[in-house]
Image 1 (cartoon, rainbow, N blue to C red):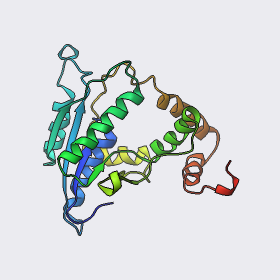
Image 2 (cartoon, rainbow, N blue to C red):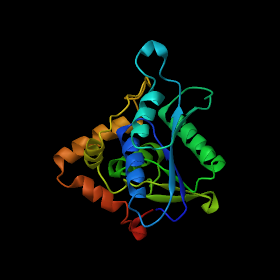
Image 3 (cartoon, rainbow, N blue to C red):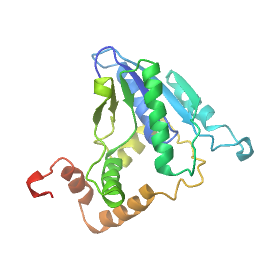
Image 4 (cartoon, rainbow, N blue to C red):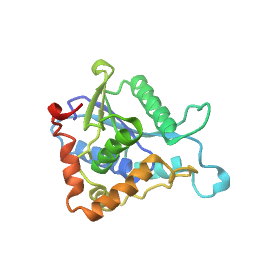
Length: 218
C-alpha cells in the first residue's frame, strides 16, 4: 500500500477508526524500510456549534494528533445544496479529500475503513443500489494519480478498539443529527442479528467478497 517517497493524506473524522489509522501510519514511519510522509486532515461539516459546549471537534482531534507529532489541518466542508443525507455528506467529504490530496500533491489517501465496513458496504450496495460491490484495500483513482488505501481492511472493529486503547486514543463524538438514522445503521443492525444466529458468518461473508463465481451470476 505504501512506497518510497509517498505523501499520505489521512482523512480523520474523529471516529476511533480514522484516529487509529493516523497513529498506526505514524508508528510505521519509525520502523518501515521506506520513507514516507503523512498529514491528517479533518473536514468540518459544521455540525458542532459553540452552544453545544466543550471543545470543537477539530480542536479535540488536533490535541490527539499533536501527542504523536502528526501534522494536522482542519478545513471547512463544502456547502451542500438541498437535503443533507449520509450519502450526500460522505460523497461531498470524499470529493473534498480528493481535491485536497491533489492540491497537496499527495500520492495516497488513507481512510479508516475496516472489515466490518467492507461487509456492510456490500449489503448497502446490494439492498439499496442493486449492485454487487464493496470497498477495496487499495483503489487506484484518476488514472493512477491517487490511491485510496484502507490499512485496516482485514481487521475487525474490535481489533481497532484494541489498537486505540494501546495508543490512548479517544473518539470525538459526532454532532450530526441523523448520525444514528442511516442506511449503514440499518444494515449494521441486520448483520448483528445474522452474526448472533450464524457462527462464523462475518468471516464467510468477507471471504465471499473475494470469491465471486462469475459463471453463476446473472
